[in-house]
Length: 277
Image (cartoon, rainbow, N blue to C red; front, side, top):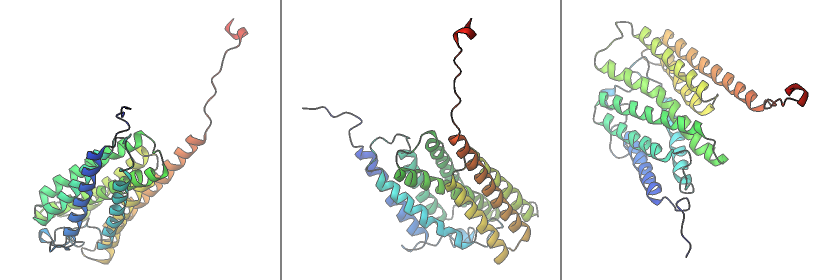
């Protein structure tokens, strides 16, 4: 009888639990759009998260990105059944992100805005951990690169913007008006978002996925402030500028990373016998 090595065992517990986590995440999203009688997120919590609630609320079209993210998460959930090793240790943080996503929807449905801030901040932290672990090792296949690196990069970029919008909504619902200058407050937050985007570009060596959804979300803030209420040219310009800065930083970092990868390794000089003498 041949002993089965630990590396050869199928991690069924992890695979099943993560699959159940994805199912819970999808069911939560269906509640969030009102499929099971729940209140749509834009109408929950007194409409605090609606597209016209604050200066930092993205236009309603921005949320279509969730369809792409959920498809990617489904792809990762399927792929992890063939991934026995989880060599970059991302499975359990991935599960945490799925459960936190579902929890956020339920908390908002209950009208607990400040608790939703805590949940989305925890989600952002988990996604940052995932990003760090994905950067620490290379994907072993193109499929892994798409369903793991691509999916969680998209997830991170979008949640970075959503966190700012969520905090803004909670503050507005509590009566905070940015010191009577909501536009100045919004511009300050957008500067912070741009800094985060540049940081992700630098750390990630120009990875496209997190930049894509971060720029997407910020661009939809610009759209919302020019086509809906509250209208604000200043906020729209700041959002468009933030998006442009992140794009430029990502392209620059990506080019530098490519140039570094193409450059030949420096040759080690070996001293001749005469030089040693």
